[in-house]
Each structure stands twice: as C-alpha cells, then as structure tokens.
Image 1 (cartoon, rainbow, N blue to C red):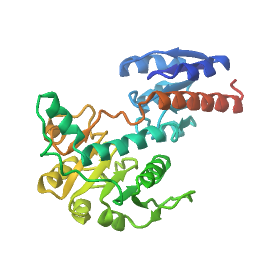
Image 2 (cartoon, one colour):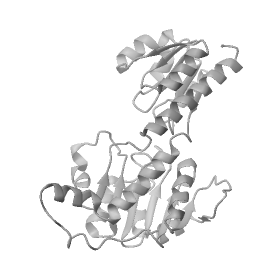
Image 3 (tube, rainbow, N blue to C red):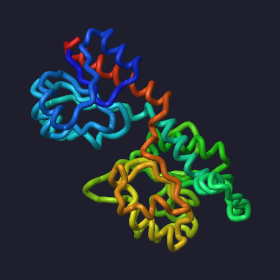
Length: 306
C-alpha cells in the first residue's frame, strides 16, 4: 500500500510501516498540493496540521484509511470518510501523560506566578513581595470535566498532590483509584481548579461561558489543554478582570495561531500560555508514531492489503 505522511512521524513508526512492506512518503504539503497528490495513495497519516476535508477525501479515489496520530479527529471530515467506507482512526491514549503533565504545569505556574515572575526577573526586577501570595494545590478541589484518557492521568497526578478530585463525564468507566463522580453543576460550584479534557462541539459551542463562570467559586483557576473554543475566550477575560477567575492556563485557542483579538487575554498577568504543545514531548511523539503505525499495519492486514 502507498501511505502518505504529511505531518511527520517518529522514525520507529515509519520503520514499522516500511518493514510491513508499505511504500511510505513523508512530505509536507499545502492544501492545494494535497488535493493534487492524494489520489495516488491508499492511506494518509496526519497529526493536527493537515486538514483532511471532504474535498481531500473526494480526491482520494484510492483512499482506504485515514489515520490521525493524536487525540481527537477535529481536522478530519469523518462523515465524508464514512460515506466512502474509509477507515478513520487515531491514538487517543498515546499523548495522555504529556497533556496531563502540562495541565498540572499550568496549575503550578498560575498558583505561584511563575509566568510573570520569570519575565520580571529577566528584566532585572526582584518581585519577592508582589508574588509572595501564591497558593498550594494541596487540599484544593480539582474539578475535571472529561474523564477520558487525559482526564484520568490528570486525576492521578492531582491525587499525588493531595488534591480532592471531583469529575463530570457522562460516559464514565470505572477506574482503579477514587475520584468523586458528580454533576457538571457540582463540579463547577466546588472546584478551586477546573481543567477541561473534552472535544469542542461545533453544534453547542463553548462548554464554559459566562453562565458557567457565574456558577464557579470566586478565585477559581481554569485550565484548558483540550481544544480551542471549549472555553469562551471573551467570557474568560471578563471573568479574569472581574476577579471571579484568579488565573488561567491555556494551551489551545479558538484560532491558532491566536489573533490580535485576544492579545489582552494572552498578555494578562494571571494567565499562563503555551502554543498547543500538550502532546508535543519526545516520549509522546514516539508513542504516537508507533501506535498509529501498528494500527495502520493491522488494519491493512485484516483487510487483505498487506
């Protein structure tokens, strides 16, 4: 089979594919170039950068498989693929630890002013007094909305910090450690820290907006390492300015790279930001590459395309 990889894959993953006898082309393509070339491939492997639109799927006359190395399928037109009986797969658990650690990192950055104190000290200042009113994670309540692979890894680490964890997730499955499963309303009302690990729903819009902020404690810290749009950015800025939200950690944004329209949010002194790097660690990249390659090989073998 001919497989196109557009956003890169670990050497181990590429080797798994070639060792299985597949022809692999790794090349970065513009949307127009992808439309012109996709017709010559049986499968395509992407990360988050490449958009596999209906147009791309229609142009992929030989496509049998679309694989995304990572969590979510936001950049793939799944209904269009299913209409053509094209297999769609991803690696939901491979980067979970990396994303969970980043979420915890943002909590620590905001609670101890690491984002702003670093900048000030590099400018020659010594803001010891200004940033002496930080707060611990210990004995605080962490609310988790979305208790999938990533949410569970966050919960494990939060428990190690001595936090009380309460979570909301309708399709919850049992775990090997204690987390209080409750309603979304109770999570919002009781969380000292709130972290989101859910997909963005285009039909319903942001999961956290003004209504949800109004339900929260004053002084809550909000973390979004899931998907841009899950948190209403304008409502978050208002909540930060009013003091309702004490701080925020953001790895994802409604538009990426962020536009000038949210400059005030990015520059807010109680916001810690990162450029959508939740799953971008050496370890996660290796796991993602190997896992997606094994899934591709297994799928083609099961359908007699080895």
